[in-house]
Length: 92
Image 1: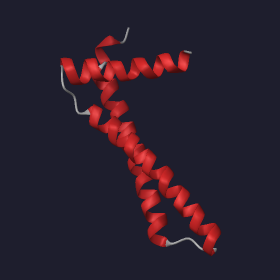
Image 2: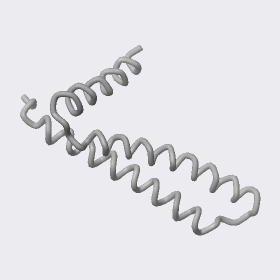
Image 3: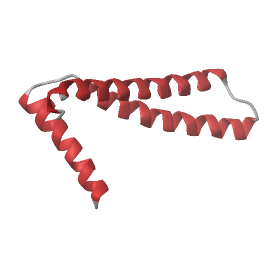
Image 4: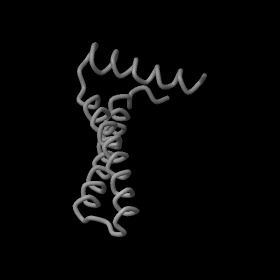
């Protein structure tokens, strides 16, 4: 399918262009964005579970969820920005 092709090609490009040929730190930004996204899902599930179970939201859990959500977005957006800057010469 087209989704699998895009997914596979993205990771192939990250490996070939930004790790093997010429190292660029945007790979770390993409990795950290993905890591914090998974952490956000886990913390959001925990937040909703405790909200349903106890009837109130713990402040530290809400802060951790928001911190991981904001970090995931920032790391991913910075990685996209670095990727655009690295490929600026390819625009027609």
